[in-house]
Image 1 (cartoon, protein in one colour):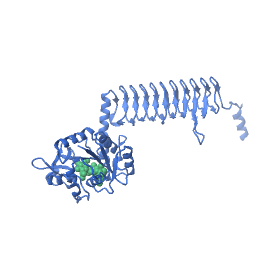
Image 2 (spheres, rainbow, N blue to C red):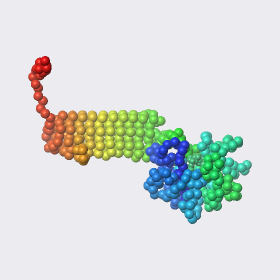
Image 3 (cartoon, rainbow, N blue to C red):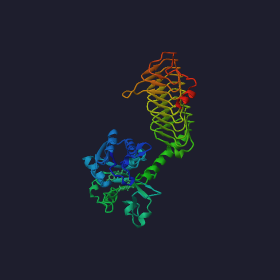
Image 4 (cartoon, rainbow, N blue to C red):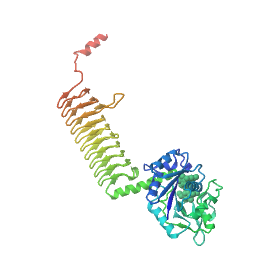
Length: 458
Ligand code: UD1
Ligand code: CA
């Protein structure tokens, strides 16, 4: 069967009460809609069309980045109206229309494929996935006749009498065959909400004698729909718990898993220990036997084996070699790279810089646009002055250099191998190998100065 997936993403998401389009809200660092697009792409269907809102250009950008089709629903007049818009756009399409909501990020391609198979096997006109909900509150309830055949879906607001007891609910994933598709234009506006409900297609089709199948194969977790911030937080926790427990199975220790956030694409090696309040985001990779102490955030970075990142450090777009120690309170900005057994101590900031094996910058330094060799010691309070007000310049420090405390290196500048910079120096010229550079005024002592000056003041 030829199937196209229509992702509904044009709603306003008023229950979220935030300015962000609902489907762009982030769940572990990725927009809700991205999850649905990914699941759809893995189903093997030829076409994926997203229905969008004209007021949400950012959603259209996301769709374009995913190289799938989209069409704009002029006004969000309900889920049936959104599907009508898709049908107009797909004029002449022959096959099954699979409908998926853009706000159910946890759906799996496996489940979508299962519906495609079931629908084809049953040769029905309309099919959908249902599940039994412990909390059916924000879902449409499946109404069946005495024989168990589905005859309608009733939304929360329209529930009356015995229907309130129904626990079987609509997942929002359907396949609409061509006969049922013809009935969409007959759906009437819901008097309560003033919207056209796609769910009404079930009663219309059943009354028209079409074959409607409801497959109760879903689960509450997988079809968790996100309509409010509370539901977003709950979904995030759900996904997070799964990710963390899979890491624990692989030998990663979490002292307080509920306070930690680890994005879906992150990798962590066995024997590593993650303390409370740690965030590991994006495509970060943590090696084996590493320790990430409390309050650390690591974004799109690599941390080698046996490395410690001490309390309250921020690491972004950086690579840290094995056996190193970073922090506490260190900041590695994008483009920082350390070799093996490197120490970057407290209040040290690095940016677009490399520091090779065995080197140390233990305290209070700024290292920007610098290339630092092996076994270099960067003394406390060293600053690479990389910016002259117009351009950034490079500092090169070769192997075995000793930079005394409180040194300013005015870039561009190069310190030759094994050179020694005396504390308190301002270095403006290149320093040859093995040389001592000192640039500070000679100390003077003025004898009895205190007594003299006191007298003078009288
Ligand atoms: C919908 C179903 C409900 C089902 C639930 C599953 C209807 C009337 N109700 O309810 O039976 O249990 O999903 O999660 O369909 N959208 C548009 N255009 C619109 C309105 C909505 O594209 O004019 C999109 C939204 O962006 C959203 C999706 O359709 O992604 C569902 O809309 P939403 O308002 O969240 O429906 P629910 O009340 O959750
Ligand atoms: Ca919803």
